[in-house]
Image (cartoon, rainbow, N blue to C red; front, side, top):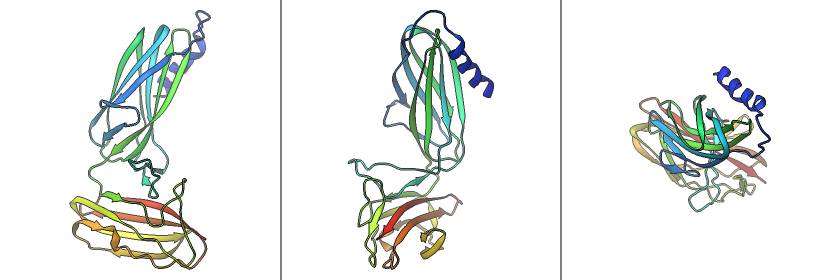
Length: 253
């Protein structure tokens, strides 16, 4: 893999046939027929990235690379509202493909089998090189859904988050939750933990649960009596051993 990466970028340095300074264009990218901004795939299934490229000189190579992201990814709601609860990126998957191409207008497909053990928002880089060494790169986020994991459909707490997703709670008050956690294979447990730093200040646990869904409104967080920054984590596991969680940052002031 490292040899292919090195070859790709050595070409960018070495190729200088004429004074062409125009970089190639990434005109369009779609994933499984979905346009940029709606890049979703399913764990355990084949995903195809379709890339359309152009240049005023001959194109030489195009690369599609997927890189394991950090711990979390988050989404805006459908109406653009910021969400307090962040989703974890679970699993490791790093892969790439480099295709040699020829022409000034190119449509190229990259197909990958997504591992069935991962979920989250993966980093995708598309890079295209022309015959004169001009290089263009663009970065995207590819969201991987894993239907084996418990599902979370949770609204924002009350009070809601600020523009950065942090929930502000006045000292001596609490927050309320709403939504549902569900699983087709039956939920084994739901666990809710409030931490200040590494110290657990409160927790609530339903185990064994043995239900297909769980009403998050059952979570009864007591008034928070100390100023500081907290993390609130909702975890769920099913009878098949699949586990996942959501986490929000709470600031008491």
